[in-house]
Length: 325
Image (tube, rainbow, N blue to C red; front, side, top):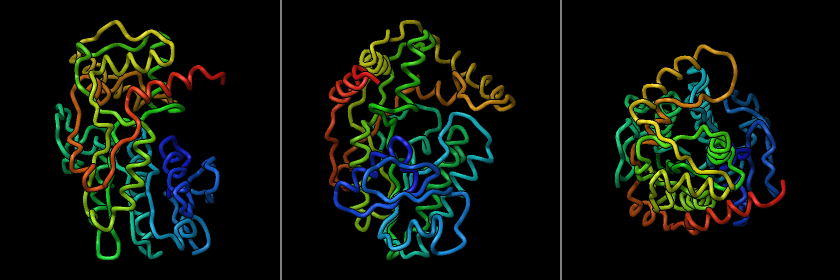
């Protein structure tokens, strides 16, 4: 699998390894997952020989989980293209040449999000033309590329986990906590928009289930969530409460946040540095519009249900913050 050094990637590699499978990972840094074989390299540079790099990582494997991606609110469009489209094409081609029979692509619900609310929808078609931001557009193109490769003997499934979180998450949880601690986390609008999220253990088990179910459900895309949509204000309060920081109490009109996000994005494109912008239009839309999903097809086709509720997840998060680090 690719991308096992990231938050979700480590959980997926550990889950599959614990099930008794041989796991070989490919990424730029050590995965830190006991019992797996790490191969270091980048998906943007194809291997030149069968015994090095990516070609070695997939050799002899029955299945590939492709999770590596450039995930950011902003950045160089060419880098998003190189990693999320070019890198995906490379992993796909090398996997096909190696005789891999199952390929699970980790996508995102943002590939089908055009800025409006999503209420009770299943996995809508990926749409690079309407997706918001370079990340979503290139992930949409990557998903379409992968699904087009589905063929007899090569079963492809796209899985879209939505807002994955849990203890140790630096992408979502740590940023929310840090901004709340410094008084820089507002509510957009009334904070009443219903949003689905996914506890990390549930996302990992769903990806494992998709791997098992691939021959029967190939060629399809599935959104993965806990199936427990909550208002934004309640989710933020749960996260902040677990971390022992004050939940946001000040509000910004949603339209103002979207306008400010567009301006900030433009500024960030022309400034040096690798830090994330405080707001983007995409982020403002995500925090002020409803996005929750019908999970019936996902659960039936993958024979999967989440095992960790949101409330249990908040309890685990609180225990994480209470442990001296």
